[in-house]
Image (cartoon, rainbow, N blue to C red; front, side, top):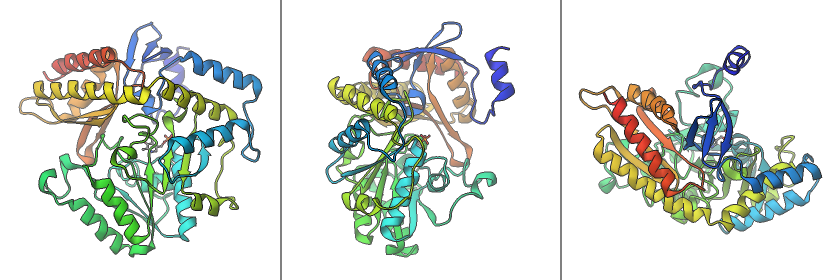
Length: 432
Ligand SMILES: Cc1ncc(COP(=O)(O)O)c(C=O)c1O
């Protein structure tokens, strides 16, 4: 039986959208069964920092496999101690303890439990359009309602006590304001939400510093500082979900550095291990960690296994040695300019947003053209046909269609120029 046939017959197809079978990857390219090359500008759901087939990573993992792959979290290992030390060294000052996880969802789940335990219970505030994962707590914090809260098979599993406030989405401001004269209505609304929920009865607020899956929503300068101030005012723990933005993806090691705001708990995953094996981490203030020391609160079989620790250590070593955070900032800025150039050429592009190598462009209806939903889907498919893999975020109930670009940190100016040319060519075809 052919791969596609077998896949369709035996696998639940809840995530499958495409019929391309990738068999090989090298750097920022992936190759299908027929040997056709595709520029990977999805980073495989933003999990890929070093690109495919990195030889140093493969060697490190192979050495680790020969040494020992799997030790439960009951036992300390050289690898997990080294990774914890390294993570503390690269996170903003003030975050001094680490818990390791497997996925972004379970790491967020842990962060929420930790916050509730430390605070003695309380509600959780997050933002509409945010995404935090697919386990119960992380899904309840997620504000992308079409897929989660409005789906009864999922919503009936969600815990109570999760409240969603207005997102800092200036392009589609919930208050109809423009960023120049809004007076931070979304922060005022957030304070009202906190008060409505009992002020100090709120345990934590969780947010992405840039809302990735919500459509690369970059909060305006001052928003995250304002959130920090409100959390301090009401004794609320601030959790930054840097599962997408962590480890250099937005041109700083962590996205919160850009705004100079330090959370109480910082969560990272996805590209922590460059996607070679799963792994995630939660960094927190020392006193939160101390309170958790004696509690059997959370853990997974593979939470701290040496193979994942080695992948993360090697990934961070290469990112630092090869200046990949700077590359993310510089090449990302070039990609941003190229997309802005496309916006000038194509009125279908309503907005270009992003920082570093996390970039997105939002599509609009234009008179005489296909509607934005049709355009988004056909553009995504046409780009694939032309050899460019992207991520399409398109939700009718949220009203936006955004093409998300998130290539590996090793991407070059030539690669992003090639990608921009494929987008241009594909838009030309799809707008007709
Ligand atoms: C910001 C954010 N947090 C958490 C998650 C969940 O991560 P995972 O899919 O590894 O569970 C995602 C996944 O897309 C995400 O975008």
